[in-house]
Length: 561
Image 1 (cartoon, rainbow, N blue to C red):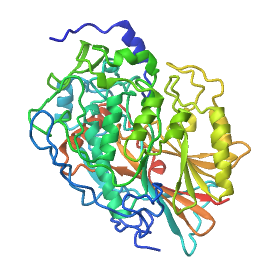
Image 2 (image 1 turned 135 degrees about the horizontal axis):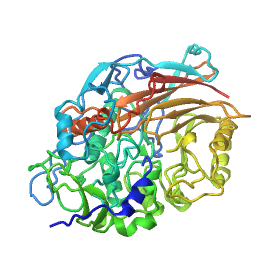
Image 3 (image 1 turned 90 degrees about the vertical axis):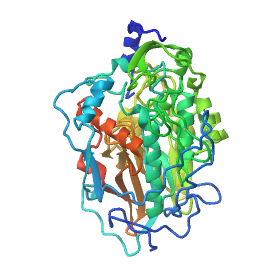
Image 4 (image 1 turned 135 degrees about the vertical axis):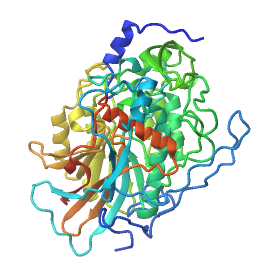
């Protein structure tokens, strides 16, 4: 029998430090509610022979085999097939998925308690409805009217930004679920956490449907892909995105089966769909730190141990209640150093942008061209392995890598998408709770000034806040540029962002961003995950990251140098 004991004082300290935690398809986003067709010059997986993502949307393909022919571990039964391809994935320009209920004026019940969560779900707190979509709003850096496109505008690239999935091992002893509250630590427990493997799989299935209809070049992650730097979390995440034969079993400790039978609860193994396009890795604080705040070296023994002081879920009991005390240990929960994490990503699929040079840098700091275009993506590692949830950008990285890379891009006539997990407003010196001051850390203003003085910079694409946002950044002494933030997949509204960059043949590039809901057709476990995320919001235990109207479906105009 598992021992239960009261929460110790150390758990209070631990929880207090948790951070947040011209061709047929060349049609602009929002010009048609149902857009089909692919480009003629892409490859099967959206990359060229060099392995780099190709421009102009790639070639639309369907998903792979629906069944692996593998045998379910321990049962001798065939694995359930992967979900079939979606017939359609409407963009939020056509329709939106929103909660039926408004958020309560004060917290209702406690979603951590299985009976309370069941009551909230029974009372409709997790229900959603489909409403009319939202138009794309134009915005210019000088606040003037949108320019008129020239006679021959051309699509350059189309891709999806998938941010803050925070795939968590919700049975880990590093969890601090007991300290979750609607007032402060709103992210130390989420009722949808156990379902996130299925939600990510649903997102993959949705992205594939968009690719089938429109053509995509790649998926760019936004960081915080996993929740607590654990090896099993990373293995689950990469397996879901990569797909292929075999099962994904998002369970740790005991082999739990909350609902008897196969493929009917979030702890059952399943066959992932796998992305039909390449994807590229970006580090976030939760990828390299325990609970997004604490150095892995300080928590290594706790992660693989059997003592859960801060509260973790026990799926051997109905509803997976929060427990403290002795739990079943699991070596698969071992924490990863940054080098170990990058090496594991490099070994998965095509490496997802991580190679030996990146590993030797010790940071997910790299760049890649979008083949067939004058666009380049520069990935900045803002996650501080020294601790704290806020971002750190080192002056050494700027001078040794970023400035030379941007200068070379300018010389080649390239426009650069800068991407990192943290936006400028989330940067610090690294000395926040759980961290250590980094003497060469750039301030937000210094980072903005650096980007503003680089003519090749097209935009800064970021995440971390779990909220859609678009900002004009106007640094002193430099040029203005756009900073676009994508909401999270883990929290309401659980969305991604579809981006399209076009040369408008009038001296401007346009960057169109459209919020993207994941589809749950024939996918009850992903639908159950959405219902729980919605409940977390409508019961006033968590906020809503949808942003304002002008933060969601937008077309941003950028003058060419």
